[in-house]
Amino acid sequence: MQCPRCAHDGMVEIRMQLRGEDVAFRRCGRCEHQRWSTAEGDLALGGVLQLARAR
Ligand SMILES: [Zn+2]
Image (cartoon, rainbow, N blue to C red; front, side, top):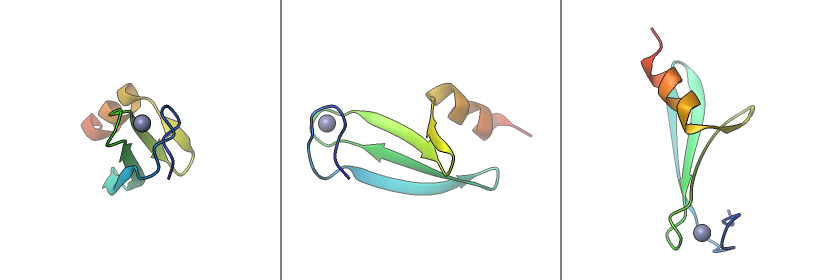
């Protein structure tokens, strides 16, 4: 996976489940660009926190 910001090839990807949803967290080791996404597309950080907090 290539970083959309600095084009560094080799973002770290961590997959996890929040509230039963598959969520992927990707982080660039060069520019520290971070991005969350679900199967439906990119997720804003606020959306992640909402998922994590939802009861
Ligand atoms: Zn980058």
